[in-house]
Length: 341
Image (cartoon, rainbow, N blue to C red; front, side, top):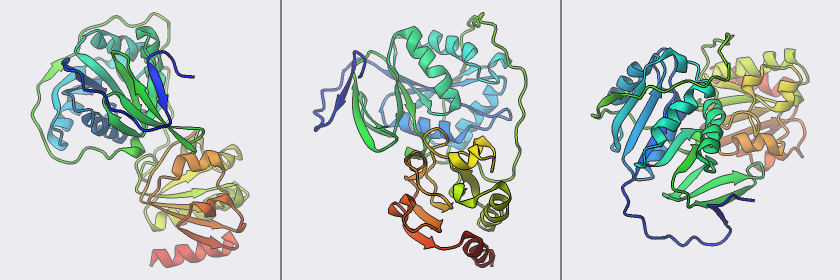
């Protein structure tokens, strides 16, 4: 069921005349602590450009100004006319109790008709809070923009696509990064202004610490090549023995199915699927991956899918471009050896 102001269509869409009211889009962009813009946010910005409105980009955290300069000097966009920076360390870890009041303060401006975020852990954390406090229904995880009020999003674990028309005054949108290209290289001119000062929530939430796993591998969410392991690898030792060398041979990121993660083969940050990361690399190689519907929802948009499995009836072969049936312990080392050459 959709809330008031949001409609679902199964037939053809009849486009309505575009309102003449002046409108702008506010885009929340994430950046790392060294000021580098997160790849998923660049895809969200690219998606926002399809709305056709002037864009105001928002950075939050003590690294905001550095990220704003990187955006201006490193990427091309024709619609960003202002960059808003909230230079305050209270936003550094993107706690929703801190970020939500900032976004609410900016969205009070009637100028904004759209608010766009990446469908990342950060976006998923605070967008529902913004929607609840503004009393608007967010349209989440969109994969296509039909027009400024009509969006396509996956449902039923990606097995169906819903076309949704949002008639609310403000459209709150989260974007599936793998469905939109990132902004291209280039540069543009736009003023950088300070965000308004807002009181932080008194809920008592605070950031304690973090324990990050550092790796020289490409980030799973934005890698153009991914090697993924499934339950067919049997144990962690086999996972490490087969997946790691294969990924190294083609400079690929490593992923896994939920079954592999739950079995302790690798950490949960590598999980691909409906409850993990959604990816769309140029090349996906699934080793011992059966192809459960929840996993397919996270990788079926890959450009080329290669499946290696001993079970020729595995569902993964129904979506694979290339398939190898046989003993993983023989096929994968041989493939790794040849790719390494």
